[in-house]
Length: 296
Image (tube, rainbow, N blue to C red):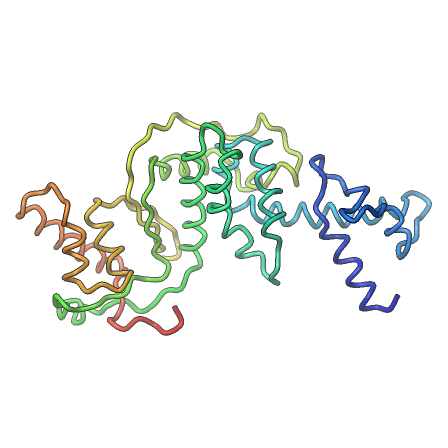
């Protein structure tokens, strides 16, 4: 076995999924004994067998990637509970393993995975999906790109046919539960050092943050970064639809028409909200120059 073959063999064995008890598989999917594979290129020592030495690396690899995903979803962890959350993460990583040099995007598909697998959410499935989407939006807003916003002169020059671009770091969420309050409550109660999966740290489940009661309520939310901090801002439905329309490439006139098409507000209130929506978006730097960047 040359060096390249050894590296490939080691990488395959280290990345092989753990059992439900977070141990190395004793038999591979092909039916080969893992102990025999380990013995073919790892020597035992006075304390550990070849299998046990390889298992250390196998478990630590998975604990690291589990922790990388878990650190981004502390409230989802609290909502689902230790056992269900860890099962979700293991199943997710089995379908979406790490394929990049960076762990930044490892958990990016977790909300969509959870939505497609309601068995992990149980009776809190819809709530859990909302929480996952908000926690992913936090990550995206925290390190998303920031473009130079419209200047005061450019803002004053906006016309009906103008096309504006929304800041890349702004995330718009339509939620079924007020999970912004829930996420903030959990983060307040959870120490930073505790925001990792119990699979990796083996912490006591009794230390988990308690979930306050949450009633179903339609919430329209903008998650954005301001002065290097991430904030959640609730929006009126019409404002949400307006911003979503602008992001999709619609002109100001078309976006406004779509946003207020089914609004129950009287005409004067609609005009006031439209003006207020543009004013707030401009003040927060959400609106960017009229040409959409080619890299988006």
